[in-house]
Length: 480
Ligand code: SF4
Image (cartoon, rainbow, N blue to C red; front, side, top):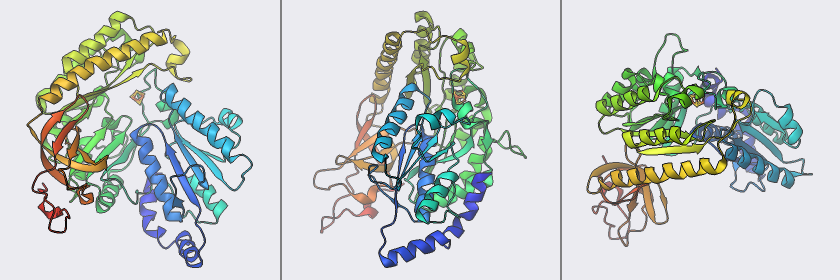
């Protein structure tokens, strides 16, 4: 597997030709070439972009936030919905205009827009220098290296991010075997391909050594992890191994398929202390005919049975879901069945999308996209309103309760982080304290003071008083 090469080649990177050129260039004052990776889409894309960026840094490229001046621009694309594809093609068009006539600059496109057949893309966007399929970064780094005289050896795909966020992602299984009729993913990311547990644990150890405390194991269908490995292992086995890593505080995983969410995995979530009590379990529709047309492989009652089994086994679980409104032929009555599921389960969060016809899928060949746009929009609004009510009610109950928050960042004078159940919690800093930088990466115990349907609020614990020089002493924070 490609990733195996990467992990084991990390050590060589520091002594590679690229690193030597980098230091030489610094000595004689050359400006190093710059890169910018623009990303749209899911966590898998975010993770791919982090790894590609790490490869660029190892080669000696400098990161720039300015897409207009970067020597190498990479667009990491998503085509899961029409809106995401439009965003990517719009950006590609704008970048293409800016780069016209400037042969020194390079543009690369990766991600789900790039399928096995690329001739149409090449015709539409002739100025793109390199097209790379998801996770296959090597051609991008190789061409960038050739253009700028930097050696990509030891820096190729899958490299562990050099400066990862405190909460980061690790892809554990690529692709999907399910072939839901509406979904383009299996055609773009290929069949399921699990990475070895050894490789994943090694990568997790490196990330923890670089400050990561919260790791989300990623897969389009993460709970089918390991079925293609010999000897066979499953997600529960993998989480058991990852949990042994000292310094790692939290383990999460995304995204599950109801048919692959086994009792063994639910028990692991319940019993392994570092595994957070949260599950994203997409139901997509509450109507059995629509579910069959989507080829989801379960009925609404089977879905509910699984959802309530999880709630029984893990009472504090945070259950989130994905729902499509306006799939081919969906009537008002069928849509109402989706609303019934929302009322019955009371999910912590719902990701709702209006059905988006995707060329190349089974649905695009055999079914009509016949629900009017206005109807899809109205159904999405109805879901959002119902969900806002449910989340508002359930979050209000949490006021006065205590949570451990892993602080992930700061925004507009406040810190923010998440609970184990993935609740977004804003931490207000008492007057005069400023925003203490050192808090990011700490886990603090807080009591919830306020709530909204989308987030919770708390005060930073009062024990974090500034010292005589007005500095916040990190050691006074109750770290759990
Ligand atoms: Fe797409 Fe998810 Fe269905 Fe796989 S399981 S085909 S990724 S919707």
